[in-house]
Amino acid sequence: MDVAALRNLIQATLDPNANIRRQAELDLKFAEEQPGFINAILDILQAEQDNGVRLSTVVYLKNRVLRGWAPLDDINQHKQIPDSEKADCRNRLLPTLAASPSQIRTQLIPILQKILQYDFPSKWPNFMDITMQLLNTNDANSVFAGLHCMLAICRMYRFKGGENRDDFNQIVEASFPQLLSIGSRLVDETNPEGWEMLRVVMKSYKHTIYVRRREEGQEIEWELTSL
Image (cartoon, rainbow, N blue to C red; front, top):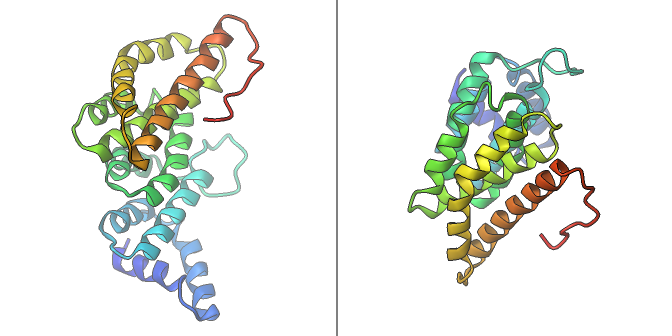
């Protein structure tokens, strides 16, 4: 797919002229179901400097993944994303997450959650390895991305059935010592990004508590609404 042409279509959706916007949106609706769309979108996302174009790009990526990632046996009126493009998306998503500013990262999280729902661990076996690499770097953006990965996996297991709990226990044992170490350092932070990172750590613990309590056959009767 022509990356430059696709970028121009996305930019045209921001045009003040309603007719230009409408035609660009129709062209993008056609393009999103063509081979190579996801890789082209990721290319734009990684290289784009214009904030408006970059935000529109990640929204188109999010919509395509949320509509087209489900298996064929799920009720879905949208064309499914080919397996080859799914593999490329998995491989590129976490590096993109680590390199993205907050506004873009917020749009990438639902994409991550959707992919984990269907593909972890069978089709994404190295997800936790990459997550731990991110958590163990000295780069704040990479650590933040790793924290979001941890939150996504904890949230996923919270809403899973009773099977695969042993897998989650292994994840907790392997990753939570590092999560605790990061959280302990963040307690003394005074900048808003540090507070947000600590909030993500606490939310991961919250979802883990739900999983553990459910394992014991107890109903959760409270909600940590402040998180």
